[in-house]
Length: 152
Image 1 (cartoon, rainbow, N blue to C red):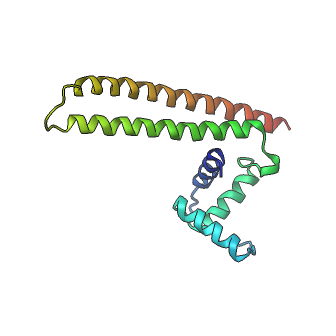
Image 2 (tube, rainbow, N blue to C red):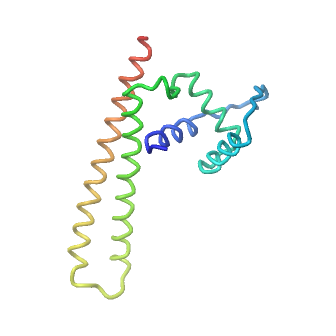
Image 3 (cartoon, rainbow, N blue to C red):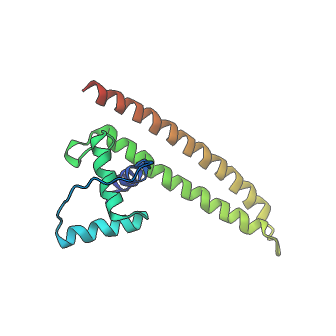
C-alpha cells in the first residue's frame, strides 16, 4: 500500500462523526474469509472496530470525501501524498526532540553537545516550517478539489 493510500484511509476512517443517537440501521454485506480477515486486520491497525472502518469508508465515499480507486484524480493523489509527507517530516521532528532530550538529561556532557543542541534546534525549526507549509499546501489543494467536485 502506498503511503498516500494509507494516509487517505486513515484520514477518512477517523473522520466519521459521532452521533447522539445509536445507529440502528443495518446493511448486510458478505465477504470472503480473506476479505474479512483483511478488513479486520486493517481496522485493528487503525485502532477501530471492523464495522466502524467499513461504515466510515462507505460514508466517506457517499459524501464525496473518498473516491473509489478508479475515480481518483491527480488532486486526490496530491493531497494524500502531502499527508504522507507530513507524517514523515513529523517523525524527523520527533527524532530531533529525542536527541535534544538525551543531551539535556544531564550526565557527563560531551564537548560537542552544545553544537549538537544548537543544530537540533535549527533542524526542529525547519521541520516545523516544513510541516506548516505542507499543511497549507494540503488545505489549498483540498479547497481546489472540493470546488472542482462541486462544479461537476
